[in-house]
Length: 450
Image (tube, rainbow, N blue to C red; front, side, top):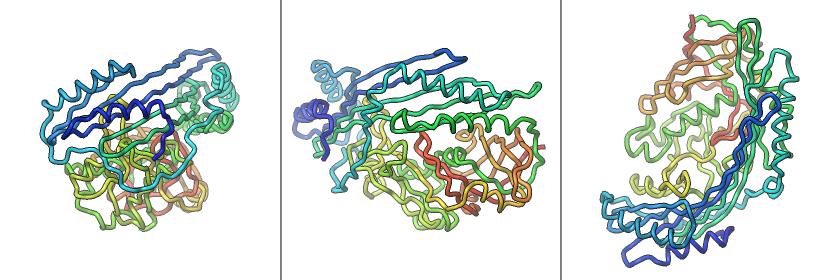
């Protein structure tokens, strides 16, 4: 048990202490804030500094669940929320799997989530950073314009208490910068982006973010539609991260229980190339979404989902676990005090290989480097596995990058793509998302262009 925010923990405990016989009660208390800065042509175009706080309460009685919340921590409001949650029980549908999480004995892995330097970083200095990122990007190439330069940070404090014995609280903060670019050549314009993540702004690599944003845009100038064919693709780390994000829904225990996953009834089957080991590991401090507890207060843990190509596990909350007669994997997710827990992957990562992207490309005689995709989530069917997305990138010929290509699609199925992976890069990129990226080589993908 970790009590990192005593003030919030006391509020949550008071709610739970008011439980009546036959009730299960969960109190989720949080407060937090964010800063968002957007710079354009050396001036602040958008600035937001906001804070919020609130409490969400679940009451479960006789298999029925009532939930209510309020965006305040005023004692009288909290009392009203508890009363409303109790009233809402009467409107709940009986569910044999309804219930709160219970302590499972898994120990938390201590991590650093709070950076005091970030907490005390002056707002004027954040603006200076954002302007500097724009300036550096413009200096990379005369053909480059900056669409927007952004700084984002956030902090949060959470406490959860339940009648089943969970008492946890903690706090964390994080930050990143990003820049979007446009590259012009005659009447043609291409887009790019770059970013940098750090525990505090002093860890940002602004030069790298600027260089990547300029290169991503300029390398696509002169792009044309490629011929249609079946080919080998090399996914850029950012694209691989998006691919893993799509894959996460198929490994979600709730989706599996509802028959909404292509992996239903496939535990123990070979579903990917033996090179593939996929983990969900929020205990890795390098992950942007690292955490020590999940949305129900259970300890976060490293879950191996696919090992050596074999499907080993689905991620579970306490609810989805009861539906599937298994145990929670510490993967309850929560959008904040205004929502009840769901389930999902927290920090997905492929176990990396050793080669750089350049070395991976050198092993490809004929293929395409996929630099960007569009409409990825809408182009994937998580039940059938059908996969199709718009893409742009660079052709690969005899182990070297060739001319840029755009306005084409790549298509396959998730099942086939996992089995057709032939190489994994060692170029891990810790993105500001729930999935890390690295370069990935997949053979026999349909490219539709001209």
